[in-house]
Image (cartoon, rainbow, N blue to C red; front, top):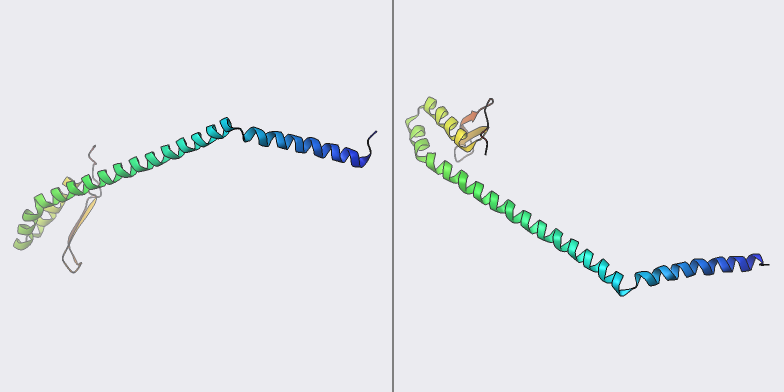
Length: 130
């Protein structure tokens, strides 16, 4: 028969034996290689995905900025002539034309000091499909 102290020691040995066998199984070279390689692959895939997404975003943004500046530059001379002539009804029509070309909901024309000269707001617009 076991005394209480012997039973406690035998239960500690079996628990520690289980813990030691688990530690030995995790220390095997094969398992460590698998864990490290999966971790490295997931990390590499995440980095590649992040870099690809950021490149695509910056490329799209640069293309859009180039497109907007090209559309605005096409209308600058016409806009300048309308402003110098002082014809406000032509200015509103031209702003509506520019906003339609840019596919914008609203458009504000400001002078150098930041004062709004004219504004366009198309509340009921139909959007173009890309």
